[in-house]
Image (cartoon, rainbow, N blue to C red):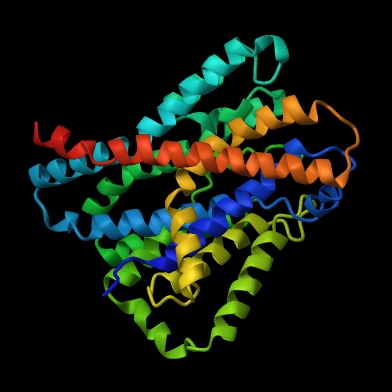
Amino acid sequence: MDKKNHDIEVLRTLAIAFVILAHIPGILAPDSFYFKVISVSKFGSGVDLFFCVSGFLITKGLLDKKLIELDFDGFKSEARQFYIKRIWRLMPAAMFWIIVSIILSFALEKYHAFLTPSDMLKSAFFSITQTQNMYFPMCRQEGTCGNLGIYWSLSLENQFYLLLPLILFSMNNKKLCFFMLGAFLIQFFIPRTLNSQTPLAWPVRTDAIALGVIIAVLNHKNINYFIRDYISSRAWVAALTFISLTFFLAFFTNPNPVVFYQTGLTALLSGIFVLLASLNVNFFARGVYIRAICDYIGSRSYSIYLTHFIVLVLVGRFFLYDAKSTTWLESVAHVALFLFGSLLLAELSYRFIENKFRYGWVSNYKK
């Protein structure tokens, strides 16, 4: 039996697609029709979907360790293994592309493609120390985040997961669910729409992760399986569900908020997506071609996330070059070059960095 959750890979694919759609204006001229699209939807909810998927998967793995049943020494051993494993999984690729960004800022300084070396080093410092989310509201207003600004989400996740093992060690499942539900509800009505101003609450955007934790508990206890009785096996139902959730996930990223709590709604929609995917019944991943494509993109979504902005900057600087107007063919060429470059760098990163180092924790842990 195939134990791989293909539905989760579908959600990762959707999430990285939203990230790409959110950032792609950087390679388009101001007269592009696409700017009319992002005036209605900024597609910033891709990170919420990533957060919820991550919260579900990480918590699911930790629940299998039964941390609450361990004594303190046992907990320390499991927590140490968790931290080492996460560092080896994420940091080699993250550090590599931070270093590449610094090198490019020096090498291409005269072209003004990237941040100035001093600003890049400052942004790199916050990325390396996993505090980019705290720096993000300031640097975004000053225009000094650069391509490393995307590390705000990685910083936020790592801060959350630094505490998660201790929370699981301290709380039973019932208390954990109430605690995370409280974390979700407290944030739900906080205005956090990202437009010309950066909301002060942006650095603590953990509501979608909290929902992922709750879904992991429900999954661990098989409580969520009652939903199976209400899920139709018909493909059109799955397609309609996917399209509807995707539409509203995009709709509630309007730069002029439809409702002031629309970021809370995107977290909730992400939770519904992950709840359905947690059943692992291929509800969304129907058909061998859909599974193959989404398995490929989903598995490389982290590398795509790390590399795409570097390619975006290079294409924008050397091909768009501050043009006020371009033909539709030029715009298509810019987008195609950007997508090709992003996938190429992501594939190299995935094969030679992610996969090479992701199991380095085993030998390190045994020392």
